[in-house]
Image (cartoon, rainbow, N blue to C red; front, top):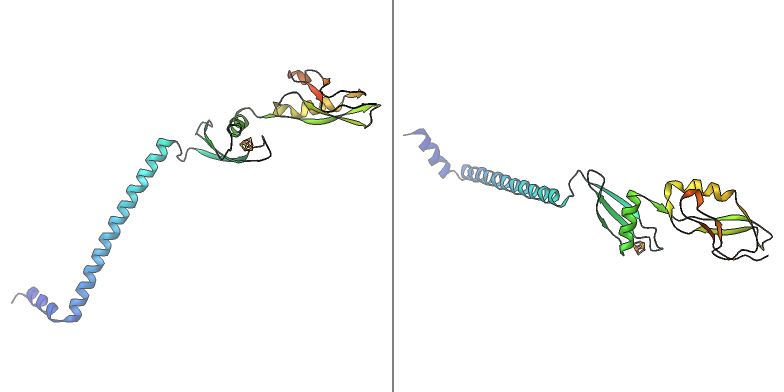
Length: 181
Ligand code: SF4
């Protein structure tokens, strides 16, 4: 008799061998299922990467977190930049000003400045001043230096010009309150 047939018959007759064969079969089936699952996951990942590339959120992009300082709500903004550093999207803002702030902050940041100047004969020794408009952030120290050299005499009315065209920026430093003698 063919030895292979004998083995097969023995297997069929011996319940232990039969059990082992079934276990082996199950293992093989499990392996196949795992392989299929892996392939499915691979396909899902491929699709996700393709979608990310289409929507511009691939690894070449950069995400920046910042707080909007335009109003006291201080919304937490998330800004996505492309590989060239251009703003792709802004999220987390409650109003349009937040998006404008984020875009400006990353291209040409502007700041408002408040300070004080010396005042002679006034009811206080210093007069609060403010800029008439925002200025480029990098010019803040130049303007502060110029303001620190100024002294005025009371009386002063709110919005009086204290320094005209400060640092040649086309912006005035104005009194932010009146001050009598
Ligand atoms: S996004 Fe709008 S509401 Fe939020 S902090 Fe900026 S200005 Fe204020």
